[in-house]
Amino acid sequence: MLKTADSGGRPSGALGCWPVIAVLLVLWCAPTTALAQLSSVEDYPDVVDARVTTTPERARLIIDLDGPTQFAIVSLDQPDRIAVDVKAFDLKILAPADVAGKGIVSRFAIELAEKGRARTTLELSQPAQVQQAYFLEKVADQPARLVVDLIADTPERFAERVAADLAASLANQDLAPLASTDPGTHGPTLETRPLVVIDPGHGGVDNGATAPNGVHEKDITLRFATQLQQVLMATNRFDVALTREEDTYLTLNERVDLARENKADLFVSLHADTFQQPEIRGASVYTRDENATDVLDKVLADGENRYDIIAGFAVPQATPVVMDILVDLMRREMRKSSFLAAQAIVHQLEPSVTLRRFPVRQADFFVLQAPDVPSVLVELGFLSNAADIANLQKSDWRDRTVDALARGIAEYFDGLGTVAAAQ
Ligand SMILES: [Zn+2]
Picture: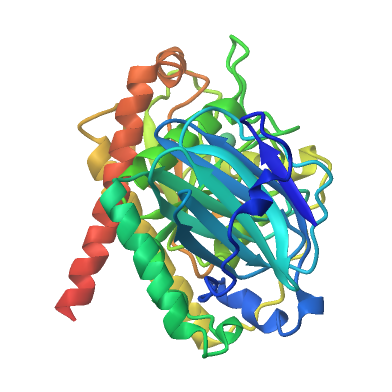
């Protein structure tokens, strides 16, 4: 079975004449939570969709699956390709779309290369490398996703990777490669980089706040989040995932679960709420506190929590937690890390944008509840204040703010490095 998506007008199925080098599948990478569930082919998920968007500078492959999987990536030449293998039981794609846009990837195909393995082949119009690859667990209506981002690269480095991948596959072919699940051996594209999960507040039926001119908070947060992801990824220091990439609704629980299940190193929720006092303005960064610090904080926190009910979703029962001392210690550690992250972000925002008085704040925001992921909520500004509304819609203000947020996030991780080295 071969399914192709072809942006170049070539006949469907043309990719099948490429030489298939089956041994070039060696090292599976996977979120650790997925490993135990993939012991036999029957446990593998189905691939339900695959799509590629591209520009001359970057490209993104998204593979939708109905469950967790493991993946491996190889670079191939003649012609230049990057192949992404996932453990899969079957392909359930009726009609894969063409490559959207023109650029790095000229076309792509997905096929069941052998029992239990689906290969997506990205044909390159120029040498490219994998900038990041990450797996997102299923939440609500969004299926599990493997996201692979490519950026342009030099011909020399591409050739080096082709040779290295070939050597690695030859060295490993006697070693029962399907049992290998060590992501650390995959090479430069998957070295352990911190995973930052950015959460654009609201979405779908939940507009969030609305400015008098009709602008919705959900659209502002998505625009900032998308740009922040790009700026962070350009540093090559982080893997960066969004809780939503479109105008879709997610409960607060689902946002938190995405960060936790993917073992995020930092969770950043973006908002631009309103408040009844229109004179209040400026950016601020929140960490979680059981005791809200003032009336405004309490109202904001309650407002966020109410969105679950407004959207027609009951807030799920809190998970019964064994309140042992380890959990408590972990929570305390996360609070400390969250506070350090908030401080670093405010430190970098300070010279660039107007801040609220006491910009590092605590409130009982539900979305900050992960006991095991440092989490902050950034109020970019208030949609109840005229100056903030104007700023939030200006591209130069957005550029400045996003750059400062990215620097703050980097400063936080720099600080962790210093702490670790000092111990
Ligand atoms: Zn909000």
